[in-house]
Length: 176
Image 1 (cartoon, rainbow, N blue to C red):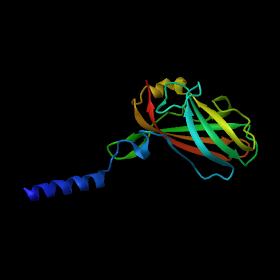
Image 2 (cartoon, one colour):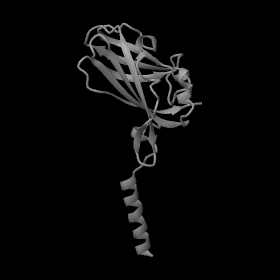
Image 3 (cartoon, rainbow, N blue to C red):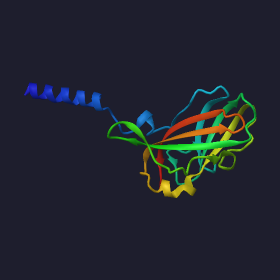
Image 4 (cartoon, one colour):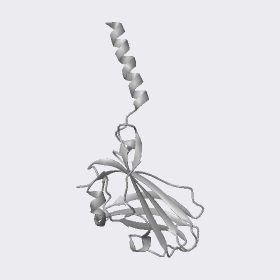
């Protein structure tokens, strides 16, 4: 009996260390997780999410406009023309990895200045409010699972200089 208990204990320990807990990556069940790719022109110190009324929101709701509030510093030139590309990924709980979702180009080559970002973006430290509104992309949002972890990678390109700002955010998202 003791050998059976020891065998079951070892199997359970080995299983959890090999397969891990794949339910909520980076504690996204309780808070958003984000990072900025290294940039010589832009630094983000904090990122929070709110609804349109300015109330902090978590989990986020992809079926309604979402406002990302960034405390950031632009050390490059004033940005007045901005291309926005968004990659969307879902968390695969069976193998603990992010899978990029096909968006068929709907979220590429967007005009950032007319798609939720107030342009121009001046030099210096500032609070930027970026509105992300997927309601016009219901063909994509309608296919997503409700109450699941998602990753958004937003690439902003200064069209005048080619400089890129890449922000990745992971969050628990509700669809309905």
